[in-house]
Image 1 (cartoon, rainbow, N blue to C red):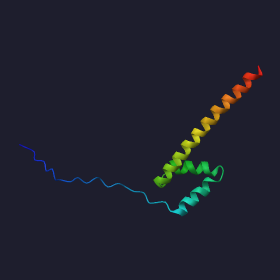
Image 2 (tube, helix red, strand yellow):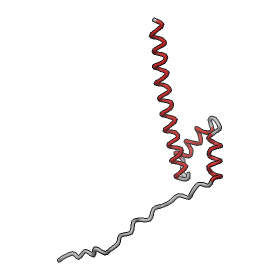
Image 3 (cartoon, rainbow, N blue to C red):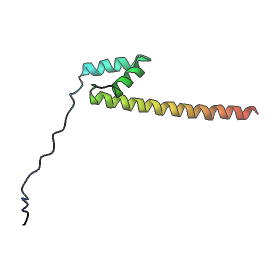
Image 4 (tube, rainbow, N blue to C red):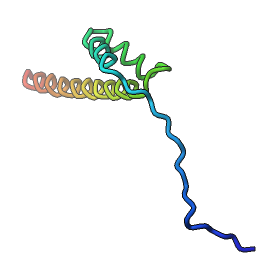
Length: 91
């Protein structure tokens, strides 16, 4: 009842799904839409969380939304410190 192992047996990795490459035209349209105020925020959410979007564009949109959130949080923190400093000198 010995199990024989063949050391020369090769294992093949499972095939990975690859997304189609976005063309330059796709990126030009993406950048144009992101340059329009309000439309950019809506489109980032659509691309990030909507179905059927190229995974590359979806990941880009998610990363852009995270950077925007980080910027908003930093802005709020700086404003709180700045306004707190001004109010403390007025007393």
